[in-house]
Length: 55
Image (tube, helix red, strand yellow):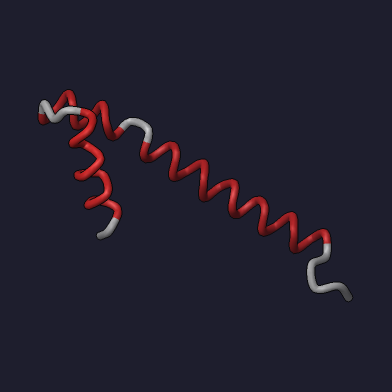
């Protein structure tokens, strides 16, 4: 049996895609949220977003 057969490769690809899509979905509205709610400029909102992801 091969180490990387088709079934395991498809599973890994699916998990990676789901993780990346969920991260994009979570991160995309955050800059506009900080701008609207806290009146923080877009270049400073990156600091708040990166801090929220470290928790």
